[in-house]
Length: 281
Ligand code: RIB
Image 1 (tube, helix red, strand yellow):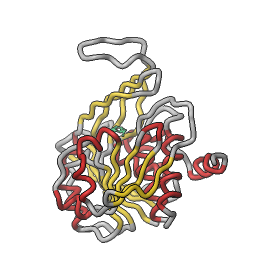
Image 2 (cartoon, protein in one colour):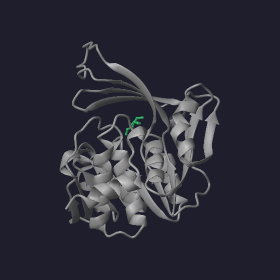
Image 3 (tube, protein in one colour):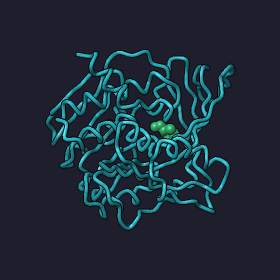
Image 4 (tube, protein in one colour):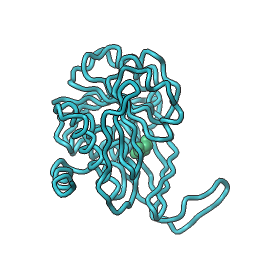
């Protein structure tokens, strides 16, 4: 099963362990780390960890951040032949603060991600996109794609009708759900709504067709858990798992991702997800 991901590639610069600052406030005592990130790259890496053959479409700058941003994708075996080097824009960077409770605040400096263009053709069983690259690029990529088209509508932004009409699966969290409102349910797509620690639901044309709660875990860092959920749900649906089983698989993968720091470094393996499901009734 080949899954293509068109989307953002960032270097995440993470300050963790101090309370999240309010506007105008300075907090101190945080620890500094850097990890590969970006919703697109996170989803490609997570899908690969769950057993898919993956390829990434995106852009990085010609700068020292590009290599660390691509490090785990490269080491994990994702095909990077379609990751272009942009001479005019820097590699995307996300500045992330993580509280002692594992909640986060993220500011993204898009850099080269804002210059990603749609390739003429993508050959894969599924294509996953998010909204950290230009929305018209996502709509164009979907128009030129024949397989299962997945749009993670994050971060929330107005999207053209043609994108909603072409998508086979739309994934939103509760905040994004509020932004899109009823308009989501006009789409013929399967809609996945993530509800944090309460799990997730699958809807089709206004009817709830599946719901799952994740196993309880000790949360360390929620960054990237939604990306793991998107990847896992796509992998499971491509394997022809039932909507209920696929949702359960994705919830378990997302929950596991919150138990470790970072976005990509926290993505679970297939064996870890299956072990968790085996022990959870
Ligand atoms: O979804 C988490 C991701 O959002 C981070 O890795 C960061 O890079 C931002 O894109």
